[in-house]
Length: 435
Ligand code: SF4
Ligand code: SF4
Figure 1 (cartoon, rainbow, N blue to C red):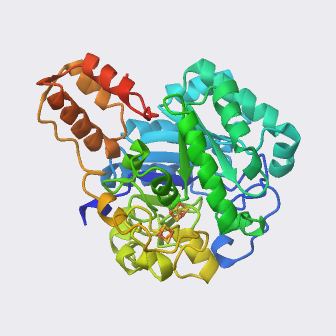
Figure 2: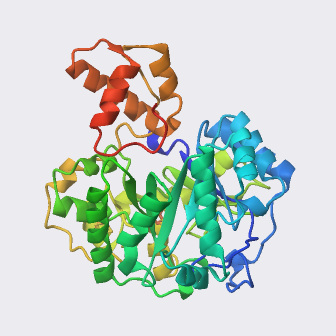
């Protein structure tokens, strides 16, 4: 299917090294390794030359893919700037996922100069002692907040990300206020724990608490509407909560056209420090290794990637569910809790399918997500240039939505003024540059 033709987002763990040792780390990075299973045995790293080869392959196979350089702590790699520059020069959309501890004004400038488009910083608590205890290093909270303030001053866009578990489920509102009010984030991503790597030793939310968190999150989304984008990450059934609370919510649009649901292996792939390829970084099952195989071949031909895409064969409640095309449950969570069944139901969802049969039609499957931009109106050159600042995989959808709006407004030319007006009316401001 066209929508599986290539990954739009690649999460690339460049190293197992880390200057923190967080309790929930899915890579079991930093500190003393706790996971001794075979899929965590090879902790070698690709060399700079091997990383360049990966970039060459990605650029050819998945042009303009959002490429998240992460770890461990990617800023500990001496060649991080070289890799970022090489990738951005090849047209990949480079983002760095970091704990933020090492960021200085000089480094922020160097990252910018070497083509990094944005940063993602992790923060788990509003209380410094609890954050530091969770991250296992004193001063981590202070350093990460300091890093965020430096990024805000440097103009390098950043998002704040939090992993929610029992340890912080009661302080989400305070975390949102910290991210937006004190640190100036325009995007806050709330990740739901997957019991992978060291995450398997952390007490997770039960399905009822998970539901309560999704409801809180929806309230926070509404509260920050227009000011900060609040996303539930790796909680695909957030779409069900959203639908049940407000079937007219404009936020539901972000799940339509194939943009919602678990993207593992359909739009998303992970690369481990040693080059192992996986449909999702939280899913430590490997389809091949970049040292031995071509990325495109693994994406297209490997049984693992083919299996994880069989979303019309999901088991249990996910298989019977009217939300499955917009949700499909977390495949990594299903895999982790069943000893390897990629298609089992997501055990952390409490929904009994059948209560909302109409949702199957409303949340219809992939139509335009990931499709190339095809303009049918005339565009001012400046307006066209702005679209180039949007990640390629959503550009087609944005161009179509902009043109639909312009037609409704009786415009035959898309201008920057029209884009400004459309942006001002959006219920959710895009995190990427449209100005
Ligand atoms: S399997 Fe899907 S929902 Fe689960 S962690 Fe991976 S990408 Fe997220
Ligand atoms: S049953 Fe599965 S597909 Fe349905 S809402 Fe829950 S996780 Fe999603």
